Length: 143
Image (cartoon, one colour):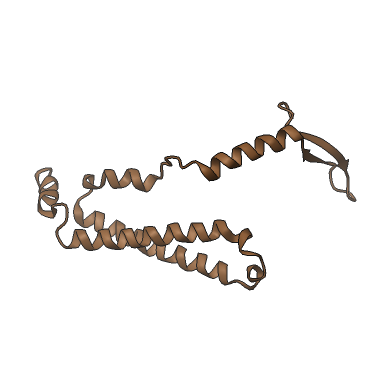
């Protein structure tokens, strides 16, 4: 309200409930919203997920522990993908136009991409990627 992007439209009370104020967007607020949305949709930015940070430090963990944790993560990601697919198939959303579900499609695409990446990474590590023996030697020297 300080910046004039929204304003109070009305105050209502229903029954014994507390009074509530209904707000509406102002013309400057709509202009700000449109500019913000244009930036969000049109401009890719670097996002900083924690998993990306963890990957750059993966050698801190012994390879066998890293593999166990990656397998654990993959199991959880598999469950998340199943959950998202189930939500998309739920009858309550089946009648909605796809436009209103696009963020769920995006989320599922990201989860599936992470699933593939982690499964491939596990296979690479199991096949000696790293190089695995050098990675193991770092941790054997510290004992």
